[in-house]
Image 1 (cartoon, rainbow, N blue to C red):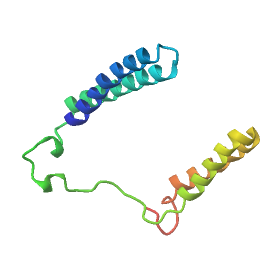
Image 2: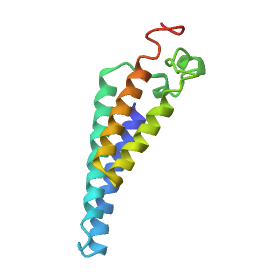
Image 3: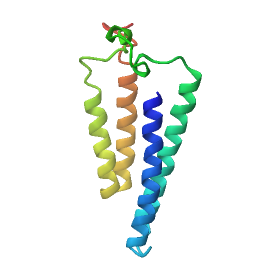
Image 4: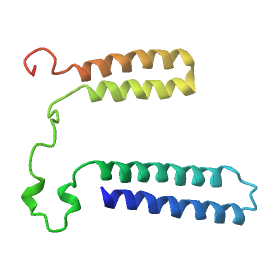
Length: 133
């Protein structure tokens, strides 16, 4: 995780000066740009600090050792559903929610309900039935 922490830490030291330069070039008349860049620098700093802190408290990963063999990173990476249809209704209900922001709040509430149903269906997809674990 050392590489990731240095990468995000460097992002913090990049975005903060860019925010200052942006503010100077626009004479601080446009407030959204510098604020967004300063917030981006803060978020990059928080993520970099978290990764640095975590890297100090866990064992080194194979990616952190330049002399590690390729098979050191082998193993199970997790379970990925190869045939799930639930992301499709979840994406459609999120589209209804975003449409509700433009059309009316009533459509947003319908989209939230549909998204909740689709999310519950996706989470509990392997709870029962043929593919239960």
